[in-house]
Length: 147
Length: 460
Image (cartoon, rainbow over all chains, first blue to last red; front, side, top):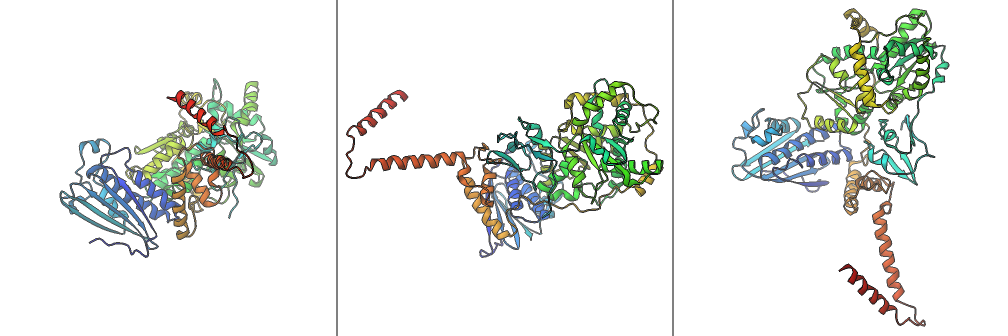
């Protein structure tokens, strides 16, 4: 089940609403997360990893889901990125984790997305990744980055 | 804290305190306080955007005067290839180089030639498969500093090869001292510069401890005297032929010139600092991982669009294009020469490039988070007009300044008006409470109501 950061340790939480199919706003949440972490003085390497993961997670929600919420939790030990969406869910998580595998629509591909690098990228950037999905209901992603 | 040197400075007398420069600054480094612009030294990257945009010419670039070359016994000119695009109907590049001799220089070494060696060093360095891709060009110092301030995550991607200017200075001094048997200490190398960022790099180098260049003279300053001597036609032709650079090196003056020179297909060249920022964001998001080389230049059109050039950028581009087309195919650098240069020249950075975390709110993460929350609260309460009247770049920047203790909410003109309105309201309310013992005018209220009715009639 989902691990939640110990409430006592939790020092900052930010939530971002992600709209499905809106390519104008796609990437905005990730860009805000990047700015925030930088202003907090988080190490540049970690900022980059979190923002790449946040960007990919955000794009996944824009392309595949019916919309959802992204949540950023910061504790003195780690940064946790949580993304929960309503949508079709992922049929085969193992397959989805493979580089180059994608179920993106024609429209998304025309816009240059859907290269099948999203989840593999998130896995590569994070220290711990938890993915949970139920067909026809939605997906929950939790990526941890140790400070 | 180290002290910062900047070429870009303010002429206080001329500054009107308008919002043009604060809105255009890519690192939010300018604030207007007490009616004058202030440049925040830690943030400024010397890109020169403010010089270009200031309608009162209050932003200036400090460069060395031509007379400063007399500090040295022997003087070498290092002309940037962008200099060649400044002259109308230029018969040959050689004429410009001979003109520089006539101005008092003893020797001329083209930075375009330095660029050709830089090309070879970069090619050599790019063989290292461990370098982070895309490799980012370090030729434009404003972009390198932009990366330090805004994209510290991309510092490992910067190619650790010195700029054509530094390479040219080293080679010129070596060549001259060998040829004439003089001490290198007596030789001064002066860059003829299209931009302020290069001037800053001489005083405050990036990636190296000390620059081999001794000063910089702006193209704007040298253009007048140089065109005069070039027009005289009495150029001493006794000297050897100075022009050695090929189209490859001269092409570096334009956007894409460096990328083209590297003989790779997979490069991307972007000019104009706002455009560069957008692409760096893409790189930062890991979207351009399949790209080999990224060349970003702060000025539109590349160095030909520098803030210190004389001629219109696009006119100069066209001229340079014609000059390059006319250039006879010179002998390229031989492989022996390259090997020799790789071994003899200090072409690789030897000083670490550090991030400049100027956006950070506090050194302590807990205080930073507190300030962040405070910032969000203040920002939510600001009007969101981004008008710049407070002297900051945007409402968000003002909120940041308030949190840092450099500004107050009442610096916002809208907030200020609101406050005045509330005060005025309170005064009217107070005026209704006439102290006991004084008679109230009987028709005060009726008059007010009458006015209100009239107003409503008009507006209906």
